[in-house]
Length: 80
Image (cartoon, rainbow, N blue to C red):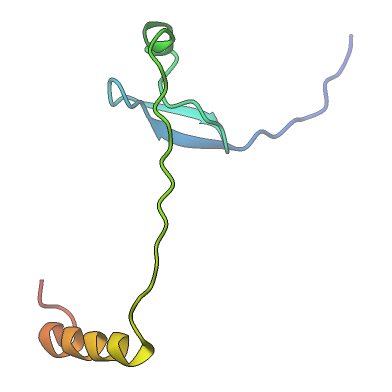
């Protein structure tokens, strides 16, 4: 009889983007549908990721001013 060595596979909890059910997939996996929904979704095209470029136009002084205004408005926290 052959003995298999213990193999650890990292898993993560994922929700299905079709039915909302929870399932486990391998960490860093790209599946977005649970095994039950995957056959129904295989013929649909996958959405493309959009790249977003963020350009900062504010100076440090302007950003510090905005942060000071937010701090004055929000206070120390606990204002929810």
